[in-house]
Structure formats: C-alpha cells, structure tokens
Amino acid sequence: MELLERKIMEEGRVLSTSVLKVDAFINHQIDPVLMDNIGLEFAERFSGSGITKILTLESSGIAPAQMTGLHLQVPVVFARKRKSLTLNDQLYTSEVYSFTKEQSNEIAVSHEFIEAGDHVLILDDFLANGQAALGLLHIVEQAGASLEGIGILIEKAFQEGGNLLKNKGVRVESLARVASLNSGRVQFAEKVGA
Ligand code: G4P
Ligand code: NA
Ligand code: NA
Image 1 (cartoon, protein in one colour):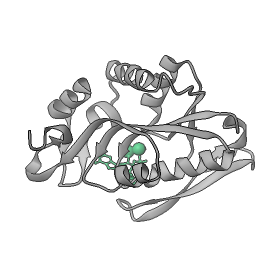
Image 2 (cartoon, rainbow, N blue to C red; image 1 turned 180 degrees about the vertical axis):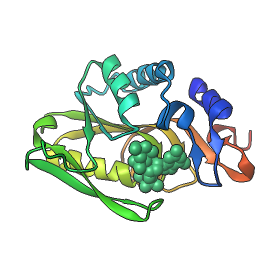
Image 3 (cartoon, rainbow, N blue to C red; image 1 turned 30 degrees about the horizontal axis):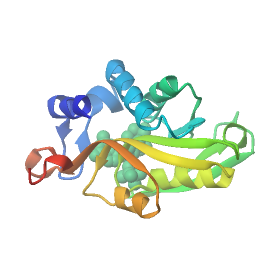
C-alpha cells in the first residue's frame, strides 16, 4: 500500500536491524486519516469473504481494526492481555510468547463475542514471529468460528511469522512488507532485486 509505505519512509525510524519504530502514526500517536485508508483497503481486500467479525489484540491493533470494522460494517473485538475484573469466567484464552520480550502472556476473549457461526478477520499492526496471530487463531478455533484471513499493517518479511501462517493455509494480507532493516534503511519486499 503506497500510502503506508510512504508514511514509513517519512516518519518511521529504524531502531536496529530488527525493529522499526512507528510511534508517530501507529503505536503512540495515531494518524486517523491513514487508519481510515487502511480500513478501506482491508475492507476491499476481504469484501468477498463474508466477514462477520474482526478480532484484534490490544492496544495497537484496535485503531486499524476499528476502521476496518467501520468499512465492513461489522463489530470489532479486541483480545485483552490482562483479565479484567468485569470479564466473567467464560473466556477463551491463549498463551502468547513474545521473542522480543522473552515472556509469555495470556490473552482472553469472552465467549459472548465470538460465536461458531462467525467468519473472522484477524488484524494486527505488526507481524514478526507470528505468535500473537497464532494466539488469536487459537481463540477463533476454540470458538468454532471460521478464520477468513489475517490482515497486517507491517509484515517484517525477514522474520518467521508470514511463512508460519501461510504454511497453515491461512490467507495473509500485509499492507507493507519490509524485507530488510539493514544499514538503518527500510527496504520493502517488492523492491528487492528490482
Ligand atoms: P509476534 O507476535 O509476531 O511474535 O511479535 P513479538 O512478540 O516480537 O511482538 C511483541 C510486540 O512488539 C507486539 O506489540 C508487536 O506488535 C510489537 N512489534 C514487533 N516487531 C515490531 C517492530 O519492528 N516495531 C514495532 N514498533 N513494534 C513491533 P505489543 O506488545 O502487543 O504492544 P501493543 O503496541 O499492541 O500494545
Ligand atoms: Na506494538
Ligand atoms: Na501489536
């Protein structure tokens, strides 16, 4: 997606060979016009999939998920990372291991909000090792719902997540695919060898 790639080039910062900082428009400050365009793009890509629900993970997945939900006219559910006192005990849960943080976190979604008849689109801001996506996929499976695909804003194509999910037969739509962050530069996948 041209607009997102341009934003990354202009306002993203390469922190290391594996980390891209996008606090200026996704992870801390949010660009609502960009999010609206992202929502429209996902809505178009998944328009034929009969999506009934969008599932994301707090916190950075919520903004793009909400905009996608607006354009598809379906509800957005976000998995919580800590069990809230007001969630009842009827929860689907999954363990998500973060290689970055070297720790495991439990994520949870109430039984109320994903049902067996749902056609689910999973959304998240980053795809790195794919552990968050697998955790969300596990929740969809527990609910007996159908997974229609996974939408990602920024896939770090040099990490394992994309292949892991595609090898499971999951449709993955990434709006920007970063092939490399070497030498302090963002190189997009489509442009490798071009
Ligand atoms: P994985 O789920 O794909 O295995 O990724 P990982 O455990 O490495 O990710 C941990 C957190 O770091 C996630 O956010 C993820 O979105 C984020 N992340 C991964 N790679 C990058 C990167 O290159 N740049 C930035 N800015 N973030 C990255 P989180 O802990 O769930 O936080 P939140 O922002 O959703 O609250
Ligand atoms: Na994040
Ligand atoms: Na995230």
